[in-house]
Length: 422
Image (cartoon, rainbow, N blue to C red):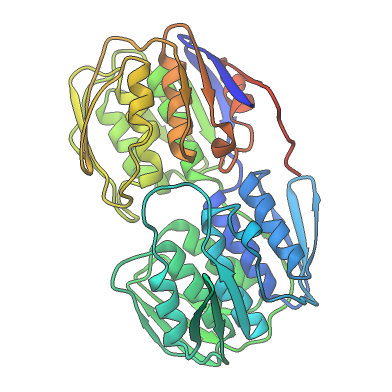
């Protein structure tokens, strides 16, 4: 079993660059299926979720190879339209392939996706978007079978969903005529997907706003694209510096995508300086409690940054209230933080963090991706040694967490079995 062994109590100093965004590269890999040629996707991180996406593309008949930080996808002659259960279970966001397969092949068969267990994540909005474009959806032995020639239409989401917006975009690019997506998700990763689709020759407008317009049916071609930096990885490293103290510069992410996170860290007593491609955080005095932190769709506070920030606030003075508005089961890290001495009370979607003078090292286990990162953040601030297991969850979104933290002077070592992700 692989684990992170963390010797806490060391201040962090130095600079670290974040890798390409997990939440951007996954829909981009799915979108590469729509091209009629070769796509060169640069700044593509080595994550287990990326490896799972690559295996899905290969199963569908694409030729895929990696060259340094780039993944090259040749989707000129796809042959498959069905993703088997064992591949779908590898990652929660595998449903993003639904729109791309249907759009390119005219039919798609998928089962329920896997990944982190964060509570119900229904795909009814994805299916409603496909139906709005003239596709049919049937359930068959626990699988979804979608088919039909897609045509442009009006898609109105009852609530904002990143995955459903992405699937709607991928479907609409292949639909004949114009599609309007209303109440679309506004995350930066949606804009990155739009830019990639434009690189392939698609006509997509409006990403980043609540209305996206797509003129579908245009012939697509290959292209070269660089994935945006991962804002959640950047938030994690900033939270780590806040928890452990020190002076850290994080590069490769757009500070504007992190403004809600840096605002909270500044309120907590950190000095934050944001530039075009770098964010610097200094923490010399004690952290202090802040006003309630409420997760919300972008441009609100990101749910993926909630757990790492909570870990930092466990060593603050005063109390901080967290309200999780996106997922029902996103406090699974709380009990593990308590093993390190944290004082956190949970009632439904609300968690109240009462800061303690110090945490102590302990054996803890990650139950999901961001919760696992939060345990490492807490371990950096704790006195003594912590052993974090469940590292396979962390590998889904962090290319080399131990190596990056080592660059900042932390003592984090990976022990046990480690399969290099190509």
